[in-house]
Amino acid sequence: MPRCRLVAASVALLLLCGCDKDPAESKQRWTDQAVPARAPIVQRWYTQDQVATGALLYRAHCAPCHKDNAEGTPEWKKRDESGKFPPPPLNGTAHAWHHPLKILRRVVRTGGIPLGGSMPPFADKLNARQIDAVLAWVQSHWSDEIYAQWRKQDRKAR
Image (cartoon, rainbow, N blue to C red; front, top):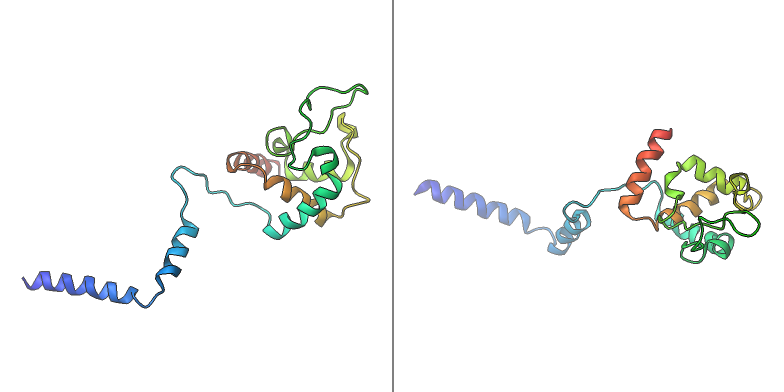
């Protein structure tokens, strides 16, 4: 019987020690860290500030061709009348996620013309920080699964 009292007293002490914390604070911490079962835990290279800046830059420089939500041209795999490839989707449904970050940066900086596309170079319009912000916005549209696959390829390319 004394052992039961000791266990009960220990449990009561543990409960009392937890009472000095705000339950909402504990719940917030728990839900912020909780992820669904089998969901990949993916740490992205960019910040939300970069995504916000990138949204503005994307709208000004990229959306006229790649569309507002990065959906690109439906027939992006077929050459147009001039023999060029039209703007592909950048939302994770085309080939952009197959390229490491250094290649994505270079394509934005130097353009897509050397690759058979018609994208102009942006080196004279966007600095390196702005290019990263645009790429952050683009990658924020990629699913965690696509981003995780891209991340593996990007690490191999370093």
